[in-house]
Image 1 (tube, rainbow, N blue to C red):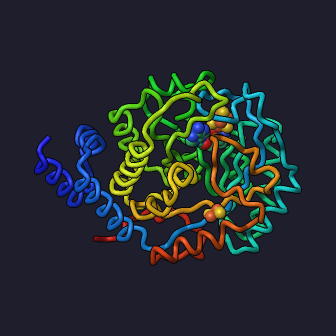
Image 2: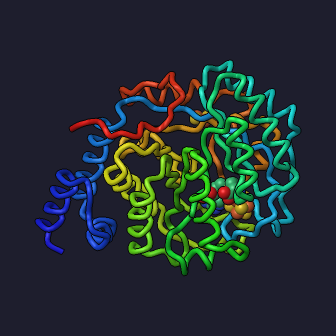
Image 3: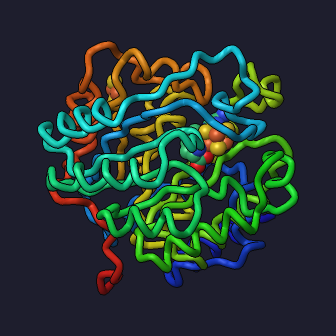
Length: 355
Ligand code: SAM
Ligand code: SF4
Ligand code: FES
């Protein structure tokens, strides 16, 4: 495609904050550095305009690496017998939540494999206790029944993260031996009905994923109006069926950033994390993401002994022994970019600011 066509698309993107799916495909596939840089700058401007300079922190507790599912890409999959499994007790989780609140972080994220050991009542009790600490609570514990989601919402849970991983049905099927595309999407629908702030998202660089798949993801993010969208690179784990899949790092990196940038422009006010996976793929990846539309960071607050065992993918960053050390590290990161850490709960601002 000629350069002026890309420039026209960028102009349209700036004016209308929207593109046709086919135009998104073209921009994702474009390897002209100048166009890519312009796209990143535009996403940064829109981020500044719609959500400002604040970066929201979410204290992540990875409380169990036990999983009943077998997703082909994930190191926690049940058939990975090499992984030493752990479960934190309710009391342990609460104590970490308390420490997070004392650090001044306004959101706790409870994440795990799909582990039915934590029944609905246990999770509800934990949410209630955490809410008394005057913090927002996000759950990311997979697919559950509507009644369970409802119980946790009543207990005070504010947000729920359940990434679709891809909105390409065929690809979804190839990634998930025991998941159904429509069931997973229906969960997100139910969560919206229950008035959670709902997070979806995808992985970039999956085997068999095309630019068309990614463009479809971006259009779905826009159409569904998700409050949070986690966009991270797929990092192969050697103890999974996709362990040997290879894609050039720089290509995957740029594709992830482009997906993020386009998502920022099309969704305007969504909360978009600079993911740990991107920081793992490339040193400085999270900093770059913050300059391409992201406005959320997730300090890892899992106790050190467990942290190393929450091995979704290899080489994960932030495996520091000293608990809480991501916080000063992230503060520096944000300040170096001329941005600031937010001190509110960091809920999604639903009404776009006037232009
Ligand atoms: N079990 C819950 C679920 O699947 O929704 C939450 C935990 S799961 C480990 C959290 C996220 O990890 C997934 O949504 C997926 O995007 C990401 N993930 C899993 N394997 C990955 C890999 N190999 N590379 C990058 N991200 C991965
Ligand atoms: Fe389990 Fe989630 Fe990993 Fe799938 S992605 S194997 S559900 S932890
Ligand atoms: Fe976790 Fe730097 S952000 S150690």
